Length: 384
Image (cartoon, rainbow, N blue to C red; front, side, top):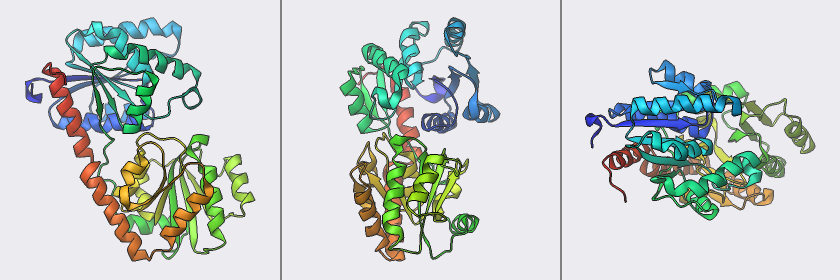
């Protein structure tokens, strides 16, 4: 089946707030629409920021408003009606709660192939919370019902297999980077550095994430503290939810390390692409990852990276950066020091190699094409 023959895909996702899976879905919807694929997006919860953006762009988005047992039956009834009306060829679910409902309700779309989308790599109760962990374990038992499970990282595939996931078929499709949006940009670099009050000569180390112990930011601040006395012309900028001056734990850590004025806590930024070209180095100190979007986007922006050996981070960076054990501030500092020792031109060359690696292996075009090929095959009834 080709898209011009009327390929229809229904995406069911747990919610449409700002997050990695939600952004990936948004970019995929746009890319598939350009190939003529008809799509329906359904959120188990509310509309959210991503849902609003999709709706404003003209894509059909439905919300079920499921927030507890009282709303569950009503929401499931509406989902059944949407499935019956839309008659998808592919029923693509995103995240565990949606995967679970997809397995339970696939009979309402008997002509559809069921595709699950799995994120992350470490899938324990500590990372997920007990309720979500129980849903994930239930999904493992129901996984033979899925025609295919798409993992966004090899580490994610392996982690879910260890949990007992046994879909009919596995496929790894890494998240794709929009190379037009994320690119080296001298004007953005100068503008962002002016906004921070950072000179063009200062080596600016950056990181993008969120405030959570598993993201390892206290280790990064400790590593930066080891270097700050040795290098006067370096600064650190952290972007993401909770990474702001009102965070008492991080503020106390920065004060204890004597780093006041040298660590910039910028909080969440809607346009991360505006900031990445300002960085001379990018650091991902995570203790757990699947496919690290922020690392791929930094590489596409021409920034060399230091990453921890978790998830697919080392596979992504390859020879274009440095890889250290997770949770080791000393090793993190040494890897950053190795890149600080390079000349600015050598760092730029490393950044250019990083972008070339993303262009070759992790572009948005390649990711969308991989999903498109999968959906066409599923719709044609082929199983590999």
